[in-house]
Image (cartoon, rainbow, N blue to C red; front, side, top):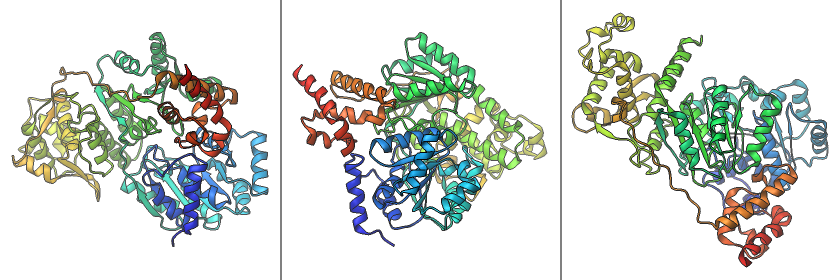
Length: 604
């Protein structure tokens, strides 16, 4: 089944006239083609690649109603506001919807004018809502954050497990699921649990090349972070913290350093939390110090940095959290601090959380993956992508590629570690293997008779903690990997065999085996050759309009649009219409005002 060619022509036209975009982003056209052909679709695309457009455009050009399931009220609010600003009839139903919004939804459903209705999954689960929706012609069911259906994922939502029942109750409606984080096993789980029919699956690269990736061990964490935010004066960013107390302490420290900084965590009064979130959305120079309760679903495109004051909980959480930076495609900075205390705390949490042993093994493996990324001696982006099953070359745009870590010859250590993996059949995790290598006869080592192995104690000169670091390095260096058919088993890769046989060299990070070795990471070069004064004037106008309308600034125009205006200096409405992000409705509403600022600057 292929789409009517006229539908794709309409899609291209709406892309320009409604959204102000000159072309599709990579991957969007393939997903749209399948969706417009009536197929069920699962699209795995990185944050900032335009997943929402893949269900918004069909709603606009086909007419009818698209029901969008989203677990996040903030995301619904943002997307509805942006769609209405573009002249598209959209509304939402969730626990915060007031009477006016509910009446708007009722009218839109009654007269068939509503194009997109965003709804929270727990509300959609209600029998009265399902009954009401089954009487309304629904053209498409769109499920955002589709990875929330995975019971082993970091964002599992139990209510997502019933969404397939909803699709069946809605007469097997066409379904599209979108997510930014899903490896191969998770994709299979999504397809099985969410869809009535097997979906067509699209997987784009997980790479976000505009993000500079950097990680450093903690020394003086507060000073390290102040130095980093100091390089981003006038810019908006998020600093994630492991505890509520730390968010407040850091916000106070940043404020003393002259920055606009606010805390955000679930323990704050609801009104304070809402005020701080709105300030972040609407102001151009605001730092939010937050727990992970903040940011998921925040569709702010011009976040210029995301820092972690403490180690994230998993690779998936890290990827999703840094993904909140640079959604506009412009360069953005990420920086993560980690320490032995973070690692041990997370390990204790896993062992003591009362979960089934299978779940604990999964979580422990995820912790090893995360620390391997922190301590990698290989290109950080290359290491991260490999953990999602994607191969790539060195990026040249991370702290490792730019020489922020010192490497030493580690072939002998790697050979000892690889031997330990082989002699235990790949069935034991890094903590156990580290004890074998260091010659530590724990109860588990003795029970499995691993104190009888030739490898036992071959690395007595190092501590178990050192050997865990070496094991993580051989993993991130691609010498060992998890068996995709048996995730509890480690196997040697072809490169691992070459190192073991002495046919290839292997480098270790010095700061992993020599903790006193520390070097400062290099900051990424700041982009922007736009006229700084003109850009500031355009931002001031945008801010004034946004404040008057009580909207986030990026709903009026994102930074990328203003930067392009400042570079190109359009002379009239026709020129302005060619700027990225300037659609027909926004051109009519705001074009003259922004052109006036540009003319004033040229005449100054």
